[in-house]
Image (cartoon, rainbow, N blue to C red; front, side, top):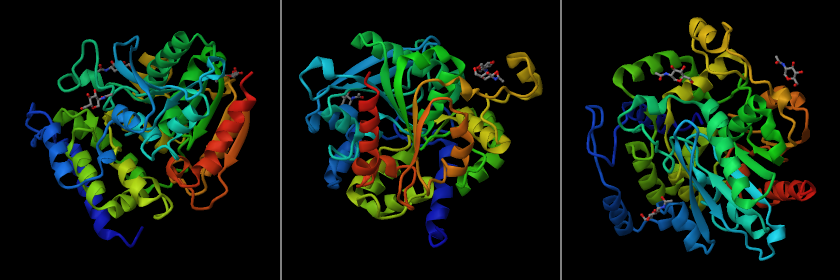
Length: 422
Ligand SMILES: *[C@@H]1O[C@H](CO)[C@@H](O)[C@H](O)[C@H]1NC(C)=O
Ligand SMILES: *[C@@H]1O[C@H](CO)[C@@H](O)[C@H](O)[C@H]1NC(C)=O
Ligand SMILES: *[C@@H]1O[C@H](CO)[C@@H](O)[C@H](O)[C@H]1NC(C)=O
């Protein structure tokens, strides 16, 4: 990475810009939202520039294009967040074979994660081809789920008062119950990537009754303990999170790197026009060996990245990195006393997770390191396997987008799903 000083500089500029939260789609609401473009304008421009349309098509447009009939569902959590859940219908006609699978994406991501590499490498498609009834959830605050019964994400800071703790305690159980109700099944399979696995660990340790609703959970690039995080930017960010958070609060900023912000806009254009730039971008953001994912796929995939989260969520992850504990949000000792009855925030008790867990981990993952997995794995009472992908270069997104993912990762998931059907 040292050989890319210009990219590093750009990267920091982009981060600073995103902290300033320049909005690219809506008219300026607050003084800090400086630039405004409309989505249709962008599309016409992109078409005119000859950008591959997969770069900017949304989930339902992509699945329609590739002939995978998809339903759009809307669920509302107990605390009023309105979430979009997509269902890719199984390719099998016999209904008795169609076991439901719920997919949950990671931070700054959306359901697009599961379909952007196309029909051969998109896990959403592969599961549907293998008879599964595929449900893909979007957690609160992302591009598809930026809605609330009362709160306005553009006006009400309160909307952004959440972390992965709320994803786990509200979003995930609401989606699970919805899928089970809709399909008439009593259990489902789960696949999480990155923060999607964190959300799952939170839910099943805090509301252990949800373990009984899961046949098996496959965890790609799992994140719980973050003591040994190797990612330089994330670590620097964590060290300064108090200052960043205070600055953001002062400026009235609660959302970071949203889909409508300028960074995403640039990313889409750059990935569409100069795919090799996205290659480098991915290697900086999650650690990845350039060249291991086809450039065409990477430009489509990375162009769909960056879908906002809350500043508070980043603060919560920063606390995990700094404390070396997998714990609830730290409000400071007085806040903690009031909220939890203890001065230190309680740790998530992963010993409560009785559902079968398959960990899928990578040797070169800067975010989900093998050292941190070594803290988590022995604590899980029903770990079926800690599978380390046998490729030294493998990192956070290779699980999904690497040309060898079907052979090295998906076959593993399908093998375990088959075993746990009854
Ligand atoms: C995808 O884009 C199309 C066209 O803009 C729109 O009609 C559709 O509602 C979008 N789908 C979702 C799930 O946002
Ligand atoms: C944010 O939510 C927490 C509970 O999760 C609550 O204690 C706190 O008062 C809320 N803060 C604001 C500003 O609404
Ligand atoms: C965590 O859960 C395990 C298993 O249910 C239990 O034995 C243990 O006491 C719990 N630990 C804490 C700190 O609550």
